[in-house]
Length: 308
Image (cartoon, rainbow, N blue to C red; front, side, top):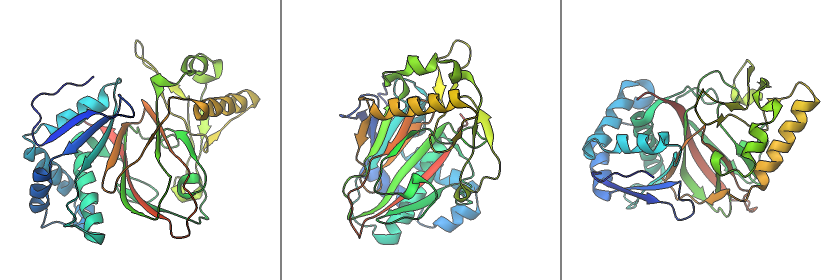
């Protein structure tokens, strides 16, 4: 596993639920200094001026003597780990919209320490905010509270690479259930069965509903591998468009296998915390929520590429 002895301003250890997932905690002193460092900026400013996103990333990194970015990249690029649960202690000095805005700035600093976010076509920005409530009439499972969102990889239906995903909880009211589901590709019991299947190397067409604002379709196999490298995966059951019976049955059986796998972890996030995963090593999903007419969870998502 990862070993860093010179970290400054944060600590990390393996999550008790999954030894692969690294729990990284930023010290309160660093958070306080970061708040002061970016006090003259707001969310609109980083939306309008992309260079400010790198500025706030550098502010955070310098407060850790430039160790945070390196540590995050080491964890995320290492196949044995590949995932971080990043948290900090909220001292309650930031509340309401002020708390939400700070967390958008914090996750933006993190994303620009590890790479460059892709344009999120759903929002038209480099990040997306979306709510989950008790009732939903959307065209995908993303906002549907009362069903399990199956394990998948992000970016299956776009042409851009999606090396990593950040999922941050920025608001939660009257919520029970809805834990984040994680399964590392190498922990999947039936990986070899589906990786060695003839359909695994076939191009499959991928599309998306209108809410995603993607006008094209793309094709690629589910498993991707370079010579001498272990396989990586790009799969989502909702948006696969099989061309024949063999592809359709393979996709069905693969999805059933993933959902039944006993190595899936259910991780609870606190407000302000974020999961950062290597999108090609990990599949992620969401457990169902218990019904509550006042249920409200708001999440922030960024996804992009490594640039270091």
